[in-house]
Amino acid sequence: MTLVPLTDVLRPAMAGGYAVAGLVCLGWEDMRAYVMAAQAERAPVILQAGPACRAHTPLPVLGAMFRHLAASVDVPVVAHLDHGTSLADCRAALDAGFTSVMFDGSNLPLAQNIAATAAVAALAHAAGASCEGEIGFVGYAGGAASAGTDPAEAALFARETGVDAMAVSVGNVHLQRDHIGGLDIAHLRAIEAVTDVPLVIHGGSGVPPAQRALLAATSHICKFNIGTELRMAFGSALRDAVNRDPARFDRILILQETHPPVFDAARAAIRSLGASGQV
Image (cartoon, rainbow, N blue to C red):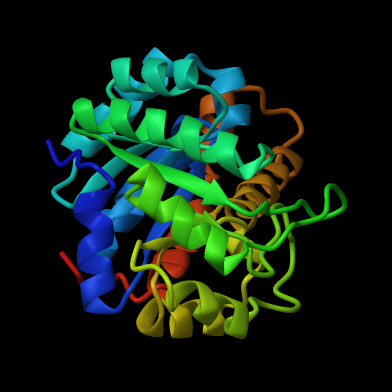
């Protein structure tokens, strides 16, 4: 079993000048490809179950799947709840065998976000797990606008909550399909100047790979969440597989054809963070 808490992969990443891929899972096909990609790259990996994944598959099932996959490889695997919205969400994930939980209080007033995140961190730590929190709000492409992270608030948040990782808003956007733009480096450096907690970038698919590589090596960003580019690889492969033979109806045969493209995309994401060969 190589299942580990988030701190076990982020602290070495911060010391070693690389970042770990938080790969967004939607089902068995993608999460299996992600673990196999991590094994091939000799890299740690974070399997993430976000709200869409949890709406489709119950948490206890996801926990069992993550644990089974972790047992099949000898690289570190984190079972991570992404965007938990309540203490109950996070407790259910820990009960299901997750080793890390992210509480998203980014829409709450600062004092409420701190209090709620601190409660989740205490719960996670008591279970031998890790906790990620978010300060500032990361918006969505074509949706809600971002609210940048205030460095002074980030310092207070890190100090008062006891989180093991802190997601920040420095120009990153969820669900971005291209690599146009990038992160605000000056903003990031201002946050780094007042805290030493490992930082997390949500919406990592929208960050140009060259900037990912640079920041993984030279900043406190130790985790990039990557989902959209992997979902695009899966969707394209699935569309090709269906269209190649419209008479086929066996979904197992069809889904098998999604594996090589998603495996390759996950390997590329891991390599872009400098994590290959780190374990």
